[in-house]
Length: 157
Image (cartoon, rainbow, N blue to C red):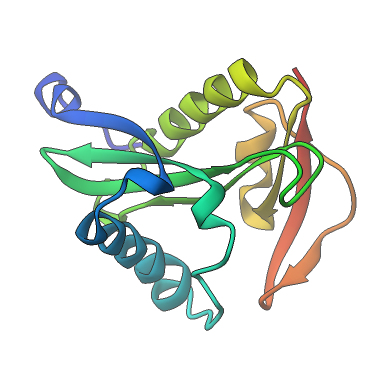
């Protein structure tokens, strides 16, 4: 695993915001990162922009004001009975540094403080052990979503 220097770590900022407070250029930046990863990098043509974003809370990870990571939290009752975490993305140059785990831990704390029913997610199957290390358990068999193997996972508090 790559490591960040203390100075580089201090240059990182996490910011939670609801969709309603993004400026157009900020939202464009977030969608550009997600599309670069989930559509272009993964070679998966699918409708990345959906009708869930407007009701979601979005966590941004910035390095010196540059967006390098993001995820979204979908409130309960929109995708599942429980809240959901999705669209977890880290820019390629910043992978392998534990930043995805940092984002997920922030999201777990955010969700636990608001919705104690638990958290459900649809994980890309190759990340199952990562999510298990965060307390999630598989709720069924793997399935294809947009031709990528996924598995539904749940974490209770």
